[in-house]
Length: 82
Image (cartoon, rainbow, N blue to C red):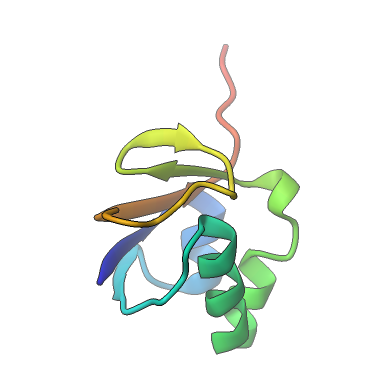
C-alpha cells in the first residue's frame, strides 16, 4: 500500500486529499496509468503530466522514479515563487 497525496487543483479534480492505493506499479508513471484507468476524474487530473510535479517520500522526483519501498507519493502543480 502506498499513501497517495493530492494538492491544489489535483485534489480538486480527484475529490480527495489523500488515499491509500494498493498497487503493483513499478514507477510513478505506472502508478499514474493505474490511477487514470480507474475513473474519469483521475484521467482528467493526470491528462497533462507536464503541468504536474511529484514527490516520492517527500523528495522531488520525476515520473520514472521507482516505487519499491516507497511509503508516499504526492502530486502537485509546479510551485511558483514571488
